[in-house]
Length: 374
Image (cartoon, rainbow, N blue to C red; front, side):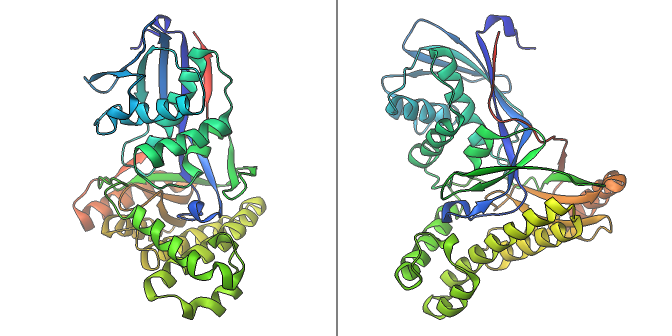
């Protein structure tokens, strides 16, 4: 047990699940994530030095970061995300107070549920709290994104950090990644539940083809921006894509087609959620997974096997991979009364098909940043 009284603040930031709108945040699209009750919690107190002393509830490691030399910690196995977050906070002109941080993460690493964003956002919020700086969730999200891109080397969009910082209990977020305009949408699933299952194939977005996909969509935008009069791929309509598709090489054409059609699916999903039409929402999830598998090529045999197992259960309205891909989780919409049977069926079929044991997570839709004075 953590002795909370030994610290000054308890700060949390959320992991997230993306209901639909995958790999379009960095293309300026609208996405539909929700913050989860799986969190990174930081217990923090000032220590009167120039160092940030890190420890973890789940690791024996202890790391001390010199706040004057944060760039030197890029290659740390543990502590690099915290170092990058502190560096971006400092570069933004904010005050850094030497402090002790105990980190407790319940977001599974490599799960596609944004443990990295939860760590970055909560670390920056903890630095703000202990220094008496204003907690601005959107500003923190943008600085956390910079840490991910410039320090960790993942050329990500804003969705993960924004959802982690700005989530609202009981609500999904319809986030326009081009403008950062966010509409909170109550999650009303009627007689259905969201079920998150991890395929338990480890993945690392830096080593995966995530950045390669980002480069491919950038190439697609470069080829079409003048012809179509667009500033981001998400502005490309289905009609414009049909007219311009022949100008793109095969692989780039597939990537752009996914982006354009996924943006359309997000609009339809918003309408389905508002109408309580889980059958339509489930169908859109299935279509999204198919597109991510064949057009965007970011799933892999484990995620495909997990989604197929879920889609094969009669109580499942739809299932797809969520997150960056190449491993991680699926999200499924399942009739509530059949959830336990669904889990047993999917876990057994998945293990039979792949040899891996999958893991189900119990998670509620939760708030983003929380700060409690202890």
